[in-house]
Structures are given as structure tokens and as C-alpha cells.
Image (cartoon, rainbow, N blue to C red; front, side, top):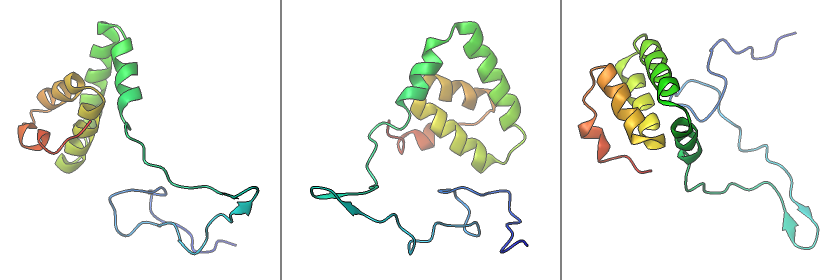
Length: 118
């Protein structure tokens, strides 16, 4: 028997949609005393995009070109806001990759660059 069946294709968080399922804060992992307190805690990642950039730069020029071509082809099918979000995330990983995607999609990202932090 289905209970509160999810009809949306978005089943993860965080996401940018308001009407999608969100984690219920009432259900948390219990803390277990050992010698002090242990438990699952949030931590701040200081570099969310570094690994993706290193992997992109580790590939040959031909592989990079193929990746950019495929991303441009895929991103052409989505709305401008999604394109900008994707470009900004790829730019955080590697500025050249972000610029190439923006150029391939004919999007001027210069107004958004001031808001990006690596």
C-alpha cells in the first residue's frame, strides 16, 4: 500500500524547488555517549568543487572537448536559469570549463562572476 506516494521526479535535497520533499528535522540520529558525545554532525566543506576541477584538468584536450560538447548539447534542452546554475557550478570547478560552456550556449556570465567563490 502506497503511503504519501511521491509524484515529483525530484526526490533529493537540497534543491531549488519549494514543493519537493524536505527532511523532517524531528527525526535525527541519536547521539551515543562514548567518552564524550559522538554523532553525525554537519561540517563545512571549504572546497566543494576542487575535486571536479582536478578531474576535468587531468583529462586530455580531446576528452575535455568532448565533455564540453556533450554538456552544451544537454544544457540546450533546459531553461536559462538551469543553464546559468550549471555554468556557475562548472565555473567553480574550472573557470575555463565554465567559460567554454557559457560561450557554447551564448550566455554572458560576466554579471554572475562577481558572485562566485571557489
